[in-house]
Image 1 (tube, rainbow, N blue to C red):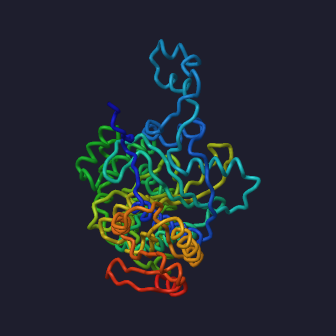
Image 2: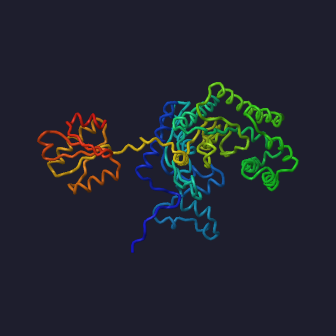
Image 3: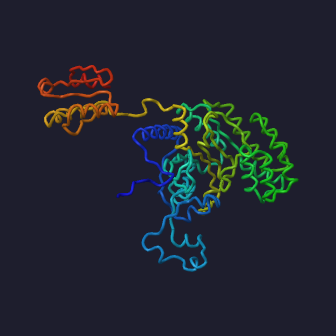
Length: 456
């Protein structure tokens, strides 16, 4: 007995309706990217392992899908690694390539490799799939699309301002109101760690702080203590735990906490500039919120950090994120190339739009008219009309077989095709078409021009 076919966990098939809805999101995002002056690029689905490894931290490295070397890869494996049961060395000796984990690191590689052909500042967008060996759950998949936009070659904070506007433009176009664009700054986090004497434990400190809204203040303090952060330092954090209110009031609170940290004061200055600009320019449907616990991408973000949350009534993780990276290209030998970028989480955006019923009814561009097939002569006559309809932008097709009429009509009903055309001997001799409205059941004999006008 043949084994039932299946697909790997964390991957999905998409039916025509789902693809149409995904394309609606893609096209909305792509249109906004191009309106803002971003240019498209594409990179390979897999990179050399050395390009990706070590760029995302230990956790990220574990989630990278490795590709086995072609041929008899075991014959070239590191025998000593086998004898010592060193999995890292074994992996290195049998796998030299990996599926891309995100689009940011491949983009940095692209910039360095093509630097002589790029006009800086360079604004690029990229819409391609990425792969992560993550545990699948709602809104989290092992294969998914990222929709990224980045600017490299400029340290101007106007780029951050534009990215906030770009988020607002896309979500407004998708009619997804109530989205929150959270912002923080790596310099703020570095400054806080400095003030409490934990600069050498920045990652441990920020990972714990990032859990504040999930596990609460006391559990966060316990985790910090377990990571070796001194109790007297944690006591200095008390004003941070109580930080709330408007963007401006939180900034005022940070000023008192970070008054001895130059890095922290620089972070406050940058956040203030961005907030003032957005307050002046305004947002259509999104809101900007300062979140001092936001700590994503610390292995490469150096300035602003973004994360986008769906409307509060939808239980969903982040639907976008990004930040400023002042030295990402230095990992490939090109220092002093500042960049900033954001990403849209297509799959989660899809789930949110679906849950809120925000996909337009017209998103599925269905076949508008099906010609019934009564035989070879009738089919050829029908195809001449179909050719003209298609030239006018009408989606039309001929049923391929001269099957029973009931079967062909049922086919049109099941596919929700609104019109069918019947062509027999009488229609051919009078050069007309019998058009049937599948909704009302009404039939009319029409000319080709009348047919085109009726359906369009």
